[in-house]
Amino acid sequence: MTAESRSAESTSEDTGTMDTMSADAGVTTGALARRLGVSPTTLRSWDRRYGIGPALRAEGRHRRWAPADIAMVEEMCRLTATGAPPAEAARVARLRHGTDDLPGGQDRDGPEPDAAALPPATDAARSVGGGSGLPLGEVRQECRGLARAAVRLDAPELERQLTAAVERHGLTVAWEEVMVPTLHAVGRKWESSGDRYVEVEHLLSWHVSCTLRGMPMLLPRARPLPGAAPVVLACTPGEQHSLPLEALTAALGERGVPTRMLGAAVPAEALLASVRRTGPAAVVLWAQARSTASVPLARHVAGLEWGAAGARGRPLVLPAGPGWDRRASTGFPRCAGLSEAVKTLTRLYQDDAPPVRTH
Image (cartoon, rainbow, N blue to C red; front, top):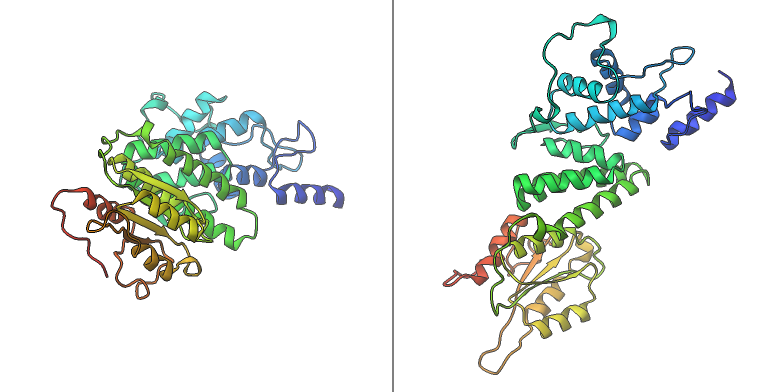
C-alpha cells in the first residue's frame, strides 16, 4: 500500500465517513464501527463467532463490508439492543439479509428462530457500558440501544425507541432511567472529545423533546382541573437547558394540571409579567448551573401578589435543577427529580392538602 493510499484511508476513517475508493472496495471495519456505534473488536468477534461479517476480503485480507453485509450487521445491532441473545440475533439477521451459513462448517441444527418472538429487554435489565463509545455505566438495557441509535444519527430508530420506552415504563421512569442517563453520557462524551459529538447530542435532544411534546398521543391524560390556576415553568435568564422543564410539563399535563411553559432563558421582566398576568399556583425556575441560579429573582417572584385586597395570592416558587445551592435557596421547597417535583406541585391541587415543606 502506497503512502498516498494509506493517507486517504486514514483520512476517511478519521472523519467517520462511509466513502470508499471504489464500489467494489466496500467499507472498512473502522468506518462501519463508527457508523454503528460499536467497537471494531465487536464486529470482528461477531464475524468470527456468528458469521456476521463481510462476504469478501480485499487483497491482503483487509475486511471490506458490502451493502448486504452492512444491512445484516445493522439488523444484528438492532436486535441485540432490544435484549435479544447475540446468537439468536445473528441467526435472524442472516435469515433476513442473505445467508444463514456459519463459517467453518459450524453446526446450526435446530429450528429457525422467529424474530418477533425474540425476548425484549426486561424492566430491570442493566448493562455496564453501551457498545456505543459512550460512558453509560450501569444503566437500563434501553439506554444501550438509544445510545447506539444516537451515535449512528438514526432518527427513525431514536423515535421508535423513545416512544417504546414511554409506553413500556411510563413518562417518569422513561425520563429518569432511560432518557437522562443517555443524555448525560452524550454530554460527557462531547465535553471530552471536542466538537465530535455535537451532532449526536443535538439529534438526541431534539427527539427527546419531540417525544415529550407528543405525550398526549402516547399516554392517557387526566381531565384538566376546571378553573385551576396554572403552574408557570421557566428557565432562569441565561439558562438554555429546557428539556427537564419539558419533561415536567408533560408529567403535569398527564395529571390534568394546567401549565404555562415559557422555555429557555426567560428574561426576568418577561417572567414577572407572566406571573402577574396568569396568577399561577406555582412557578418552577430551572437552573442547570450555579451561574444561572438567581436567588434574588426567586425571592422577587415569591413576593409578587395579585387579586383583590383581602384575598390576594402569591405563588409557590420551586427552584429546580442542579444549579441551585441548598444553602442559598433556604426557605424554598426542594425537589431531587421529576417524581418529587410532580408530587410537590400536584399537592397544591388536592383538597385539604398539607402545606408544602421548605428547607
